[in-house]
Amino acid sequence: MPARGGVVEFVLGVLLTGLTVLFQHRLSLPFTPRVTRLTRHQVGGRKNHSIYRGSGCSSNQFLEAIRLARIRPDGLSRDPLKSNGTFAQDVALPFDLVGCPTPHVFTKDEACDLLSSFGGLYMRGDSFVRHVHHALMMILRDRTDGGLKESGHLSKCRGDGMFVDRSFDCVKNLLWDSQTTEEPVCGGQVHAYIQAAQGPDGHNIIPTYRWIVDLPISKRIYSPIIYQSGGIHHGYIEPVLGFGKRNFPGTVNLWAGLHAPGVNIPKMFAETQGREIVKAYNEKIEALLALQTTGFLEEGAMKVLPFYNVTEDAFSYDGVHYAFQVNMEKAQLLLNLLDIVWGDIAQDGGLVELKV
Image (cartoon, rainbow, N blue to C red):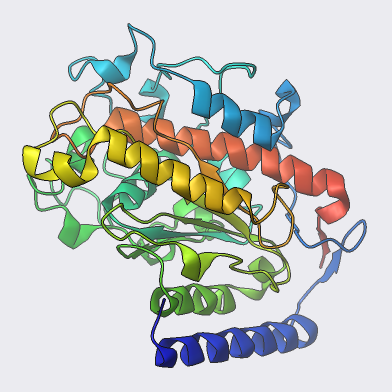
């Protein structure tokens, strides 16, 4: 648990956030938001409406289908040569979902349309989370070096190279905030930010609330997405339980389950982060979160994206991390899930229409 001083700062941050949002939301809106009825979660309109949700799988069914999926014997993620892709359209999902149709592979325009209908996307975690952020930026920008702030900075930081932190010096030029590029991501309509953190605690939750407050007023009427995880070396999740419980609109809270270690995991890591240990850690987190709530959009809910089975026996370049193919799979699964969630919120009456 965070120290007493951290708890006090956290509480003050929450109070200040609530007051700021309340006054700015009521006094400064340059338009009139209209919703079907008052709901905790709100989203904006989309050109494509819903792409995958109409397939018949609910959010919970989709997550369970991912949990049960396994890589096909001929799956691209098993082969380092065949899986060396560069663009979003190069991705071919190497697994089939049990009880749900094959996930849709989102294009740049479709992904921009989807994410711009939420308040924003705040990602917090270690390199596993950061690599998913890279993959999303590659989709949203349709660029082989989409995770870099400046184009053409390093030719080796493209495709698979975008995810090999220790081999190439890409980290110094990483795109942490989608609003800081010369060419705005999705025309500036998508607010995506990655906070580097080993795991959740009271101190690194405070910047999340500040980020929400700093969103443009036009975005603050939509539900933001909070995507986070903590490595097994960090070991606790309690500080983020119930995150955004009293926020309005409510946050969409997601926890990224740890992926499977590669068969080539170094011995020094296998003793503390081997397959059976990671499985047990994932199960413990899922059991804890299941006690909080069952519904995806219930107050304080946080759902787990279970990445273990869909990455087991995939090729890992160092036994711990994955490159383009697997991280692009994670990003596409996230987009499909958000497509379902968007439809659920809209159906529940949370679709906001703006009248200037």
